[in-house]
Image (tube, rainbow, N blue to C red):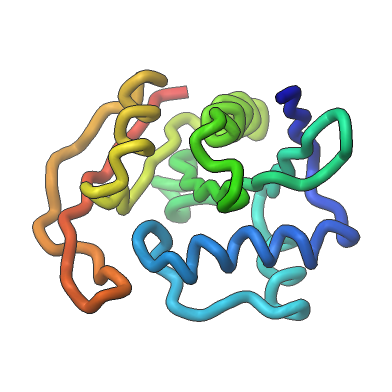
Length: 163
């Protein structure tokens, strides 16, 4: 599969929301509890420093996305944060890897110095393997830092990557 990543456009809103909400529904990766709607989704994606849309080159179908934004302000404003969402039926086909690599380059282009993930859930083994492969550094373990959909708590492992 050939993947193109481009900036978010207003016309992408419905498909981007559907993919984002799949991850929220899964309840094992994103901290959000609420689903995006047409209005909140457009505002959310447009408010980011960058929202990248992954498309299948042959068909133009949207298959994933990422959001990139500051992790903090002021003296820590050079540190950014990102989240990635891949359409459920094509997970495991390296779309996430394309998104993360594009995000690293875009974050540096925008002027950030560090990309930090605050809450990588310990049971998200695919993400952990990818971040290790791409040179992210784990910062330790926060016990029971993530509320899973089933009501249990899972450890989180913050990570960072110097750009």
